[in-house]
Each structure stands twice: as structure tokens, then as C-alpha cells.
Image (tube, rainbow, N blue to C red):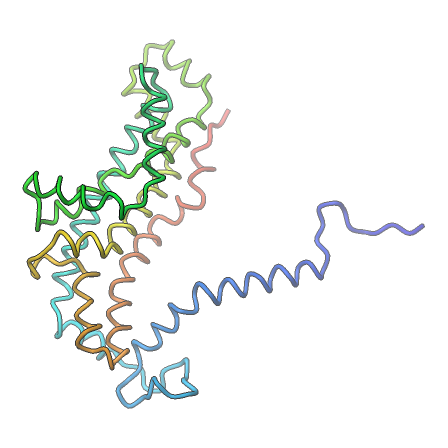
Amino acid sequence: MARSGRGFNSISPAEKVVRYALLLVVLVITVGPFLWQLSTSLKSVSEDVFTQTPTFIPQHPTLSNFAEVAKTIPVWSYAGNSLIVAVLVVLGNAIGATFAGFALAKLRFRGSKLVLGLFLATLILPSEVTIISQYVIVRGLGFADTLIGVALPGAIQMLNVLLMRTAFLSIPADVDAAAIIDGATAWQRLIRIGLPNVRGMLSVVVIFSFIFAWDDFLWPLIVLTDPDKYTLTVGLQYLNGTFSSNPRLIAAGTMIAFLPIVVVFALLQRFFFKGVDAGAIKG
């Protein structure tokens, strides 16, 4: 009886076709809207974006829509406010989540399981449930209508703490025990053993924290009342109200808000995809 030339782990041509077809569908769903917005933002006024057969490639590409957005709203001022908030949130999560994750993973103290349980319990509650209490606390601290008040609730996110805890737990216990025998303090174990081996997860925390802070709309809308302190997502709502009939400007504003996310991901993508392998313990 003839045997098939394929092994147990080999993929048949039909399976390859199905996989690539699924990947193509996912690519269209995820990247398609972004490319369409980019195309719309580059279309001139002479092109009809409401036609029944719209064209994907602009016939007369122009950057005038981006200039018009900058003339209509102080987009660069709003972007600066968003950047300040994002930097505060990223620093808070990078430092706070790292310290908390290391403490939960590598330090032994009374009540550690209770603290971990409380962290897990906070993940069950949606943000809308606690947003009123957060505003009361921020206002009581005197940070209402300030960028610090916008950044404060997201400065340390429980999910990031758990991610860092998982990363620290992946470090072999024998390495940590050897450091303790050699007299290393908790701080030395964190700096010399922990951080070099969790760079991949730390980059994930940085990227997710930046995206969360940059894209947040509801919380800045509640906290901020001074238009000069608006973040970019809140400020761009003026485009929807003033130019609701001109999707070119709305698409241009969307691209301006999306560009920093692309830059941050491009800078950290090497650590995002390969950081875990690069930080692995080598014998």
C-alpha cells in the first residue's frame, strides 16, 4: 500500500489555501478601514466621496485636508495635551506595574494572595461602573480640569500589573534563589535579573498603555471643561459637528490621531514580537 509523502505535521495544499484565505479576510477587515480613511483624507474637493462607485485611489491626491484641519481646530495643541497624558500614563504603568508585578511574583509577604485576588476582582468591573467614583476622587484631590486628572486613573492598570507578574514568574526560581544566596537585595534582583528578562512584556505594557491613553475619549470629556486643555480625541469632535458633510476632513483628523500610535509601535515592535525570546535565560 502506497504511503503518503506528508508527515504528521505537514500541511496539505487545500489547508494552505484555506489558511491564506482566512488571513486575507482578517487583513481586509482590520487594515481595510484604515486604508479607506487614508484614501479619503487624500481626496480633493473635486472628487465625489458619496458616489455609488467610489474609487480607492485618489484621482488628485492632496494634503490640503490636513492643513484645513489644522486651521479649523488647534490640532497640534490638542496633540500636545494628549502626548502629555500618554507620557504620564506610560511612565506610571511602566514603573508602577513593574514594581507591583515583581513584588507579587518574587517577594513573599503577608496578604500577597489577598492583594492578587483584589487585582483580579477589579478586572471584572467595567470602567463605566467606577467612573463616577473616579471623578469624585480626582475632584477631591484638586485635579479636576487638569491633564494630571486625566492621566491619574490610568497611571497603573491592573491588567498590566498581572502581565508583569506573569513575566516575572517565567524567570526560573533557581536563578532568583542563587541571587538571594549571593546576598542580592530585592532591588538588585529586580534591576539585574528581573528587568533584562521582561523587556518583551514591558514593551507590550508600554504600547497598550500609550494606545489606551491616546485613544481615550469618555474620561477626558468628563474631566476637562477648558477647551485649551482638550486632548486630541475630544478636540476632534468639533470636526464631526462642523464638517459632518465633509468626510475628507474627518478622515484627515483621524489620520493625525492615528499617526503617533504607528510611530510608537514601529519603535517598539522589535521588542513586542521578539523581546520574550531575546530576554530568555541562556544557560
